[in-house]
Image 1 (cartoon, helix red, strand yellow):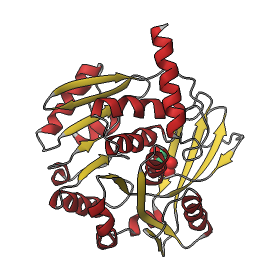
Image 2 (cartoon, protein in one colour; image 1 turned 90 degrees about the horizontal axis):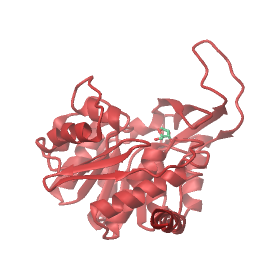
Image 3 (cartoon, protein in one colour; image 1 turned 180 degrees about the vertical axis):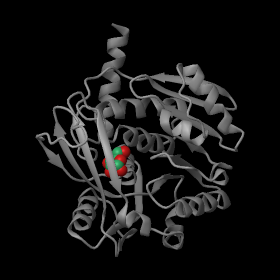
Length: 310
Ligand code: RIB
């Protein structure tokens, strides 16, 4: 049993500052870290939550690429499916302000060199795993082809439709699970509307079931997350914590969710564990450096249960 992540790997150039600068303004930052990309973050989350995880994607033949590949090797990943492409490694400029809010500008670089043809190299891995995870930081044709391969081979694909982009609806047909946040849900529904209540989000997400998606989990930040499928609606509230950096919170959620489903947890149980993983992620700086480990997530959950019972 294991998880395959096909997605982005980025050099995250993160500057922490008191507040995000306005256009034309320079502010002084406090710290800097590198290593991210939604695919990479989700792969680390899945592995640290105890599932055997394979990462497939592309970085450049540059020093950022070397650093990313080394970090994967150090974590115990097989790096054979990380292609070295001619373009520069994907780069992400991130400002994080006091309180943890961020703004991000991503330059995809080598992530777009991971082509539908490259998927033939991961077919043996794909056939052996129980869950496949992807996002929208790689080319849309690659994601479409991955969705087709999963459908044809009876593999459960978890798609985190981030960052939001116009989506070819054929990807959604037969998809096991979609994990949009509020903005990504609106983009998928091709609406500018925002929703005010959890129930309104659930009702909106339900429309995606008509496109053939089996399960939709909308992540609602500090509110929690809501699952809709043909059986009904389930809401899991977020834990109240002091966030210092929210970069990677959604990735902690999706990657942990995949790992827990891989380990036989139900969707509702997996949502609770994934919620705890994100709560730990946001309390530390960086995306991958902050990705929590299984024992810490379960210790946090036991602590929360004691608080609830007290
Ligand atoms: O989801 C967070 C990630 O989005 C960052 O690590 C950054 O690389 C961007 O891709």
